[in-house]
Length: 356
Image (cartoon, rainbow, N blue to C red):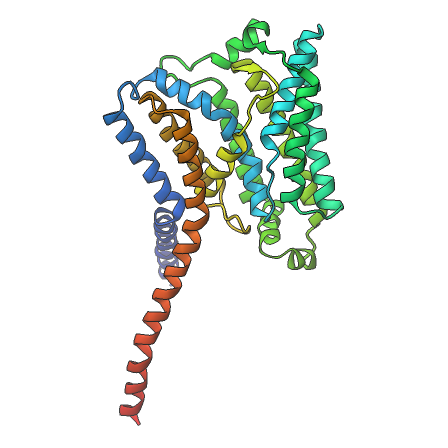
């Protein structure tokens, strides 16, 4: 009497496990990740010098800024909003570090000031969007220009190279994990990815962000604090962007035009990874896959000495595909569903006539 239910429970549990695994393997994230692996394999086979630890190190280091900024950007777009000022906040933080370094501040104090600048910039965006109620597109277009202008005011035409910062900091940024070529910085990136994935997919706050993307009114009805949620998302975005600014000053240099144009790559990667521009849909895994997909294609093209203008065109094309593609796919799916229903109805009617 007791063995049958136990056996039934075990079989049911295994069936659910297989169903869940099958669902994941057939999901958009899994398919796109498989496509990324195919692109990496093709680059290793057909692009000279791509399959080497040195290439892996440079590719990942160049992808670090986009990987980090894509994390808060994913959460913001899931809510149906956007942040176009991310690159300008990173540039302003970098300019802050450079200007304070030239003024004789210690590196640690300059880093602290850059973090405060990023948080204040994100809070400014969040206040205007969440509490004043202004459209995020209009606000962040304005602050994109505002923060970039402030960066020029802060540092002017000066530039501070990475070599002017403490050796321990630049060594840490450029350090690799043994002979693998993987940068040590990727450990911190992986931890950041884990934190944002846990917040979005494993907490009530994250589930509330999806609800915001579907309907703000419905989210308020079920008790989600819409204004506070949006505000803290933009604060988190400012904090992450200032962290990118610190990395940028240590790996590249501190200038007024640091990270310029980076927002295009971030948004293209996030949308390409399956995050809906209309909100309510997307995953951290998909966004990270989109970032690595664009980073791989871009670095492979650079190894082939393809001009930077072409790289910008490719990024723009991928952005268009990531926006138009899902809508086109949904229209085709609905059209096929309607055709299938139209073919089924006459058969059902004929069966009803015969049965009568």
